[in-house]
Image 1 (cartoon, rainbow, N blue to C red):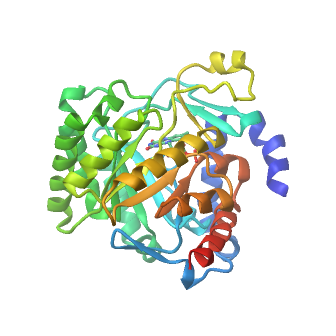
Image 2 (cartoon, rainbow, N blue to C red):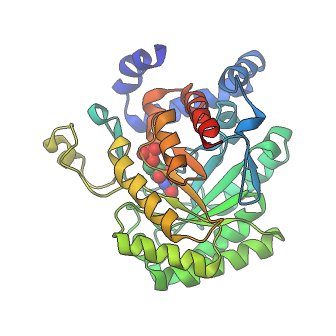
Image 3 (cartoon, rainbow, N blue to C red):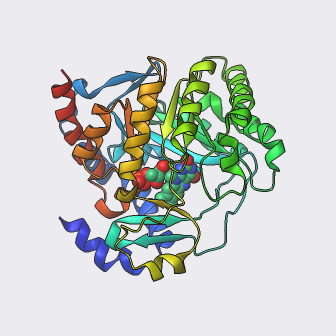
Length: 357
Ligand SMILES: Cc1cc2nc3c(=O)[nH]c(=O)nc-3n(C[C@H](O)[C@H](O)[C@H](O)COP(=O)(O)O)c2cc1C
């Protein structure tokens, strides 16, 4: 109950990216403090139960709910975010080369809609630096326990025709530390990236990434592809068929949308003023659920589906599990709901477990 007030009086008055940096720094510092850190873990994991555990893609997850890519782009706070109650943390998007991303401002709140628009443009320290950080994380006990997804994308200056080499570089460097690897071809903020979702482009890309990651990690590294909600249904089904053909481990649906639905409460003038970028939050929920259902009807048995887009409550997450999601993720609602959000969703999901039998 305190967080909404704090959000209104403190964060809402700050530039959203500054607020993100400060909140994330506070989370990392708090998790490292002896008493506060322990309290944080106890509160956020209270009621933890072995019944929540699930094995997906051969990986054990403490529960089904995790933090979506984009919050921790450089793997700076995996242990702290796990302490906050997320069952897994997907880091990235990481690109082959470091890059600063788009010009600021590039993150905007649509408070009336509890949505965000971002055009960050994959600002990140690059695969080599992130690999060094992951090596450090995995050298600690808490870091080895954390379930880490690694999401990779294309460096902006690399031409779309040369994308495979750039993804392969990241896969080679990062796969050894990953519980699962995600090929992101769906962010709207890198020109040409989403064209890689076409099956003809995606097939060789996924094959090359899989080969590089397994060679480098010397084990099977579960491989998923993350798709956009803006794909036509036929294209979603084409990705599902490709996944079956390649024996992919899973699909993450969905990324942000470039659409600006009329149902937004934020005045159209304000939305237009913000300009280009990916829209996330509850406005995405219907399409995200629809894409999940399409996929579940089309993928081979055993294919992991991670549902993301507009999840705010335990009930939202439960609906995704009923519709066939193995795991669920969220990002935008973290901003509006605060530090106890992961706990609430985890406990809310528990209903689904018992009703699922
Ligand atoms: C500020 C911001 C940055 C994001 N960056 C990434 C990213 O780097 N890679 C990625 O795959 N998705 C990224 N996403 C998309 C989220 O992972 C997620 O797919 C999307 O926001 C929908 O979920 P939500 O409605 O719970 O936010 C980003 C989202 C936001 C809000």
